[in-house]
Image 1 (tube, helix red, strand yellow):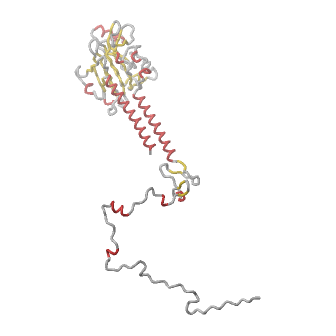
Image 2 (cartoon, one colour; image 1 turned 180 degrees about the horizontal axis):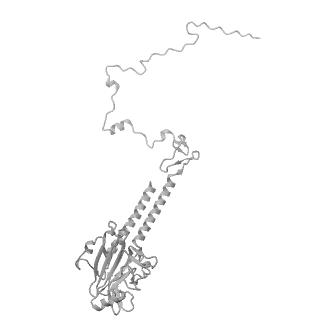
Image 3 (cartoon, one colour; image 1 turned 135 degrees about the horizontal axis):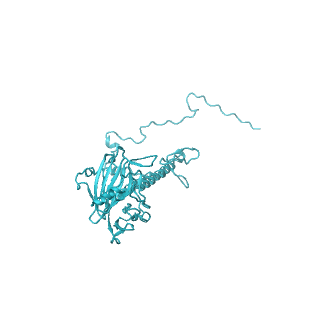
Amino acid sequence: MEEVALCTSLLCLFLCLGVSAVCAESASAADGYMTVDLEESRAMCRGSSLTSNRVWIQPERPVLLRLGHLPNHDPARVEQCELRISAPADYGVSITINSMNLDFRRNQFTGSISCRDHVRFSRPWDSFMAKALAKVSDVFSDRSDSICRQNYEVDINRPELYNVGKTANIFHSTKNEVGFEYERGSDRSSDKEFTIVATAFRKTNGSCPDEYIRCGIKSVSYCISERLRCDGFVNCGFPGSGVDEEGCSVASGTMSTHTFVWVTLVLALAVFICCLISCALRCWVPAQSPAHPRLRLWFAPPSRSPADSRPTSSSGPVPAERTHLSPLPSYESVVGQLGGMQSPPAYKDLFPERPVTPPGADLLPLRPLLKASDRPGTPPAAPPPAVRRV
């Protein structure tokens, strides 16, 4: 049974590695980011005041807005949510859609998209002129279009970031606040999902301060914290940017939770198949005797013929008296080990009034064996004939 125990141990090891990797990755993401799951924040989404639905972010601690990532919650129960994402003073807010799976319909003739579930972002403006320009062109608009995507996940190695249209994946505001809106359509399917990253950045005219990296904008310097580099999320949410994750996938050697879970399951399945093959080869082996071509279980003892039942040695069969490894103990030693019991009494001690006869005295004497001529009633035998001499 050693093979079965070894296979069970390997399977448990791979499963433990998979669970620990998922937990470790989730813990590392929770340590670096503040996670807001809309399924658990429905009370915040329905807040009426500006402070009840406000989410604060820090330069070293961005926010993950998620939907459909909790196993015991139905994302379809979240019908609407409005949040205010705020950063410290002198900071802006950058939004990046890392993944999204929302319902929409595409017109087969014009190719236009009609969102049924959508996400929308907005930025505050302080002047009347900015609001007037927003009405003229979408470039100056203070609100993004209704965004919806299906089975989308940003490519970390080569991110394509753009902020126009219903399939935009970035949005930013130089003010320290961004509005977030989510609205569910009539579809109540449970496969809705999105992960949105909100990062605080600094806008400078020169180089970035120490412990900050530049997001690659030519005209101005948008700077984010150095700690956010190569963390698996695009934090430089600006057109043509995403430099915080360039050249990091190979160098850091990171692996997503989905990929690691699949790799662990494939390895566990491979070990399980190898164990089945090993057990099959061990359990069904041909018998040692060529005269009986049958199969036997590997854990069953091999059958032996009666002739081979006695042990043998190089000089021949071993006698029966030599089969014991050690001589049997005497009767007195066994009785002594049982608590000092006395030996059974003698016969003369049990029956003293009866004389003891010597051995064989009560047996009848045997008569001598008579010859045939000595038996009574037998005629005498004839004398032998005389022999004549010539």
